[in-house]
Image (tube, rainbow, N blue to C red; front, side):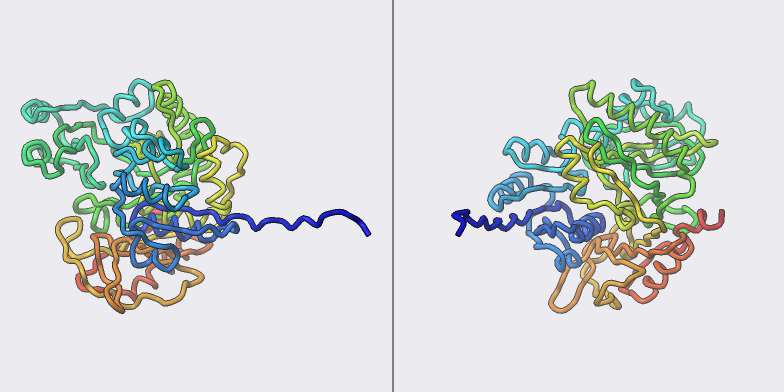
Length: 436
């Protein structure tokens, strides 16, 4: 009889992943990570009523850096994924790295690309990235004097983070003056609006191109288009996003190659030269003017609601991609996409993007996942047996199909069965693209 010892393989350790945030984007991230063949144990801080069915929700706010760091250390979290911009701007990635914790997202210095529009614009100019001409101001009197010399419309942007609402297209000089006074003197966005940037208005079609990058390799997502204005036909004030669709026909293969070459690559290289290499998702919000892409803004994380239409089309295991970015080996992971299309319709609270009520019961939510539609919770909470509204953007309803038209139909059919008092949504998401 052989003296060989039978080796019994040890069970592989279950990976623990923490997603930071509580919106529709974070629900989509958790949903996609739950599909990983590696079956990670998922946590979300703070999460929402929809995320609770997929992850352990932890009552820690997304901007509580100390509590998040302590939780990740205590629970031995293997990877943390940051959804929103605020914790990135506050230095969550730096705090985690100082503790030897693995985290997906850019450092505080790299996050200035989003947390300061003035920093971002200056860097674009130096890197010769196509963007609208602009000037920045830290005194309202100077900004008002500058407006008097301009031809309308112009675009006025709060320098800091304003939850997607700190951008105003001023069509008259009175409108521009009121906006500057609201931002700089009345401080409607607090410190974020104390400095402003005033830039030339670009007339064209908007497009979103996001990309994974580990600071060297750049892997673009499928192109998407967001709908920022609250009303049909792009009317009313800007919001955090009322819907999106993917892939956007404007984002042809040749255009996406051009964006990577002339916009994404130069910015990644510019950040590296500054000594603040960028790791995470780089988001380019573009305006196509006569087929030439200009950068409206850079964000330093996945868009919301663009994430809700892009991730359902990602074929590669998201967990593999995120780890490759963190470990500087993105070139080793082939990123592939499913055919077809996705359309997201945001169901919002009455009054949004202004003041709105909360705690309203949501009726008609399906109890099981549908094959041709998905519902990502954005601003929801559980109250007893009910799911109630807890934010301005309440639900992201996503339709899936072989074509944009099919996906749009599925999304609106699902929306029609859901209700809460004062609910409103746009009825023209993806309509322009379908009409083309």
